[in-house]
Image (tube, one colour):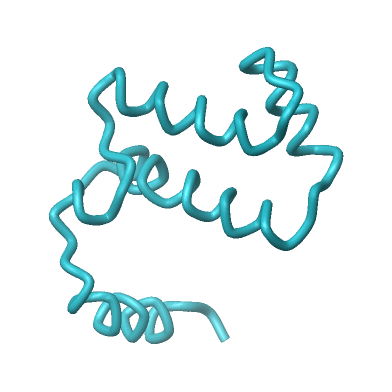
Length: 83
């Protein structure tokens, strides 16, 4: 599958996870500059909506990846990651 499609499925989820960890300045700037949103989380949702509107999958499920495959994916990442 195309690299961009994989990123579109992962980035919104990662941003939501990251948002819960910290309310950083970069995310606020992203939300305001790109989507005109004052709230970081609304900026994340706007990004996800934009991807959806152009037909890009925004979840692993929409990419055809079943949750039962996650362990295999993680194992593969570990195997190919530089040490």
